[in-house]
Image (cartoon, rainbow, N blue to C red):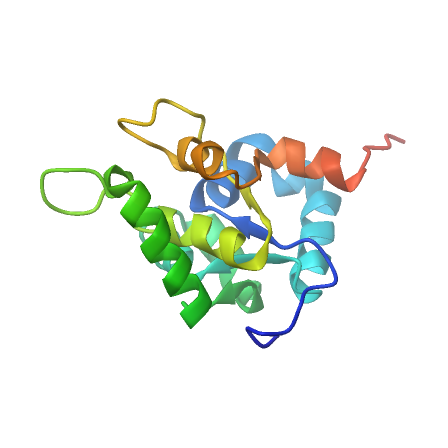
Length: 165
């Protein structure tokens, strides 16, 4: 989708934690395969996206989640001009999002938020708010009025239900 094309649906910006923790701890694919099938349908429809930096983090952190991400490579979007502009706005308002004392501690975080901000979407993360002085994704989302949910809340928002039998 071109950057200037209005979206006809909600865009969800997935954080690394939603993918890794989601597949490893919350909705294991061996038990909750239909949830991941539905997420993959949303990826194909362009509704679930992640920035390229999330893909880089997955390569460093998790074999299983990385293998899944490779199969769902169309989920990943480059850092377009609109995302870069949003990233600058986010970091200008919340420079501590990248941490202190040298290297970045949350490499993908500003871009994850920027994708949702630029596209009028919602961040999906397993991070929890801490405080704005040592911000995590939810802290910045709250401060900037950007919607965010956890992966279970995302599943609930889709109206998906588990049927045993």
